[in-house]
Length: 549
Image (cartoon, rainbow, N blue to C red):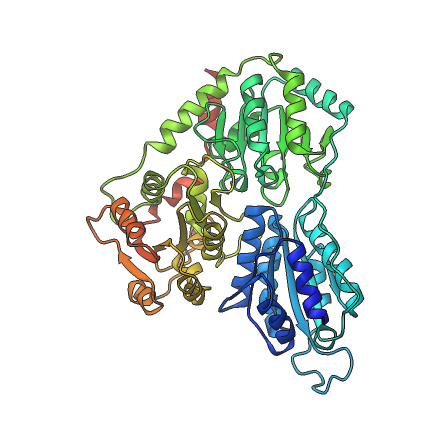
């Protein structure tokens, strides 16, 4: 057994089923070990897409996804995907090859200090210098990537080490993590603050997107009368048809949900990370009493200094708070009125005759077509804000978006990963024409894998998100427009199917036809972003009137 075979056996012990990547000369021994293993290697057409796939796998399963590249340019191509996982709290293991430690005859050709490059982008980065380090390095890598807060880890395997003899070494056994329980003193203090509050609100973030957390949170709401709103990446933890959901925050600072949060005197954050929605936006006056409920301690910030931190298993913490608060809080009719008003103003405004389709219409039609637990994966673009604001989400991690690195080009990969993790559910990747062309080459990967998924391409022939910000700043329109290919023909050239939404077409029927067709289907849909000006409106006065009636 050589070191590569030992390395792959360690991956098998960790339960790895797929490795995504682009092979290279320096990883051929590892590739041969993968060929003889139970692990499926999925070749991608770009290393960045491999990292996006691995990150989305980690987000959906809680088990670290694995991506592979060679040295030099292969490793540098992984960078954006690794940063995407690290900022988004997605467990990922990035494996790269490297020149031999001894006997390197090629000098500096393609030689980059990859470990130093990845160190600031990961929780841990290391080079494996000998076979005896492989078992403990791989075990520690997975513990670190999957531990709180989840993130990215990098392992470098030099070419000569990869083929060294490794007989006598065995993988370390994977052990399930055990999360500690929060202390009773912290739970008692948090409960006391919530009892004293005039208008408490729960702010639910990405860290709460776990299977056991949502049901416990829902029980807490129902037994206490509390209301909750979510960040973009926390959407679905509280089903948005629940009467105590205040829906989700977007990038717009003064929308209905934001204004309600600003008026709260106590905010209890659930699984909150400041990277998602900075506290300076919603606690600018630093006058709120803050309760931090999470798996880990709060990150220090000038605008986020919790009075109490309830640190431990999140589901258990919510259950313990429910026991302490059940029946002890006053009703909040003002927030019930606010929820009713948001429903009327946000969900009954779709224009059925507009051409091109407005963002509101697109969101409405997608929600009509998909079932409660089907997946919508959003690339980064202004449509993401509209979906965060208006797409009713009923289960955690079914609206897959990124509001941490917020990189373009990741939407297709997340939809692919969702179909791999849950082949019985439908998946829709919503992409802009700008973001899609950044990773379009991996349309071939989805076709080759035989996946059934639909790509809804919203075409405005411009960088629409930045154009909105440009207009919002009072600047003239400049540098945002571009030309596009014929996307239907482009999809067909990759072996996918292409459909086009034309004047008079019902988007719902086009999407249904796409799913009926099977395979990979791209739907080219023109969009009118004229309504973007609504995202800049200040709703503070409206919310104040609703809450004070």
